[in-house]
Length: 151
Image (cartoon, rainbow, N blue to C red; front, top):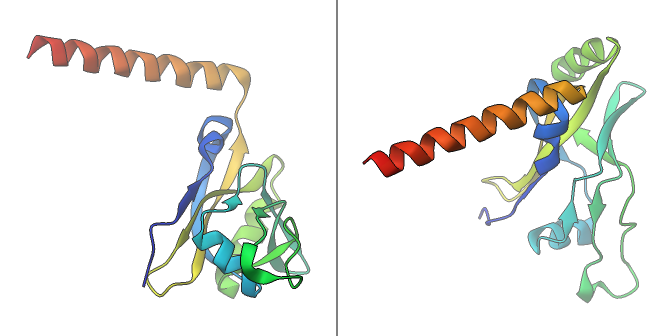
């Protein structure tokens, strides 16, 4: 039943250093899952927040479903993430540290047809960290080119 939906947050790997990863379900309304299955969603500008020991994803865009009529959903509402209590407590303890945040990395449809979201507890990178990543990426690309030409 799973479909080929995989929406990634490509900038997150460049902007943040991931500390720990989790997979969470998302509490959605009826037309939202249909829009996600049509690849009309974006997690590029979204982030996670804790409200009363519950985890929410804020600013996640889910486009309107064309065939829904006037019963459509709000495209940027807060959506509750479904995790175990142990995982929520673990995330809550980690977020007490200064400079850590929750960043969504991938939105996909699971084996059973439900929408899932990979989230990471992340720390923002400094400018010099970003430059170092670009240098290592360029060096790796150059080595791969040389090995390919050598063969």
